[in-house]
Figure 1 (cartoon, rainbow, N blue to C red):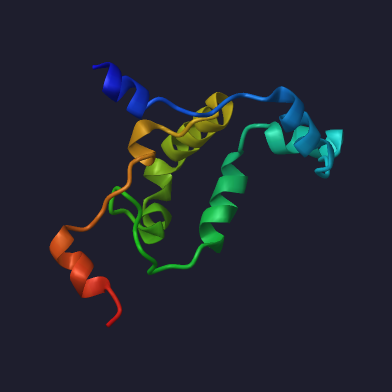
Figure 2 (cartoon, helix red, strand yellow):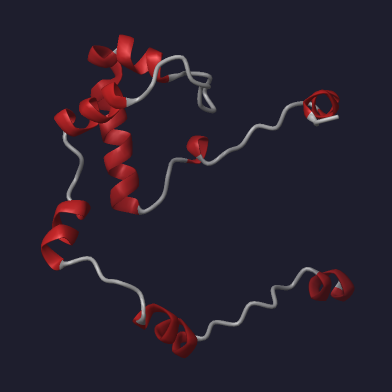
Length: 114
């Protein structure tokens, strides 16, 4: 058991000094703009963003593309807004949005360039 514990142990060491040095040279967002960026999304903002997206593009993990949300906005809009605002507040997407789907291995061969 010790063998596997040491094999899969992280080599990451937190170094706040190095982190501060790295971040000190990065540009900063002005406080006024930061306040606007951190506020919750509004229905008009989300609706405008949705309408600006191109139709007939690849669907997300749930298989629902932009066209679905456009067509059923009156039904799903508020729920979508609530999910996105909760994600902004918590700093994390729901588990269902953090999953990736990989096609079966048989498809990988068909998708590779020849």
